[in-house]
Each structure stands twice: as C-alpha cells, then as structure tokens.
Length: 140
Image (cartoon, rainbow, N blue to C red; front, side):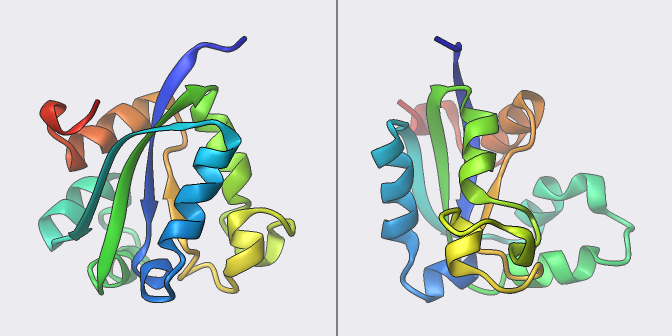
C-alpha cells in the first residue's frame, strides 16, 4: 500500500457559486480519502499572491488572482494513499475540454480559466499550499 500523503485541494469560486462543493467533497470521501482540514474562505489578494507565487509576473497572473478572489472558496487538506497523484487524476486535466468524463473537471467544467478545482501537483507544493491556508491547529 502506498504511503499516506496529505495534499491541498481548493474548490474554486465557480464551483462554490454553482453549489458543487458538497458533491466535490463527497467524491474524495467516497474514494476513501480523509478530510483533515476544511474551511470556507474568501481568498484575499495577499493569499492569492502566496498561493500563485510561481506565476507572479506571467501574463495570466492578474486573471488568476481576479478569479480566485472573486467569491467564496473551500480549502481542504485531503489525506490518503498517494493523495497527490490520485487527487489530480480525480480532478482531470487542467483544461476541462481535455478531461475525461467521470473526472471532476470532465463532469463540471468547460473552460480552463474557470476549472472548478485546484489540487497540489507535488508533495512539496502540497506542504507549501497547506501552510498558506491552514495553521497547524486547524488540521487533524
């Protein structure tokens, strides 16, 4: 059995506005993952800058910040075997038009700029992103 990992997942403002948060959360739980941290928040520009620090200065950066700060989002710490890679597989391709049916993006999203959900792409990113959104006391 693969080692237990923790990863960061964000249900983005478009999914929250469409009432998909519970469905997305349920998919992770039904798969067998444990939710170790959960919060509803409004991402500030400061949080967005920390979250997307590797994209600062890129042409699409302002649009990322504008979107992620546009409404409430749900931040989660998800734990389970091979969580980083499995969660990313469950989410589907970054471009929803390339996402297979049955994936979160394949089922609920149509455009890359509003692609429903974010998941860390490595253990290092997961640790950094969890630290951006959660204090140690906010996870179990």
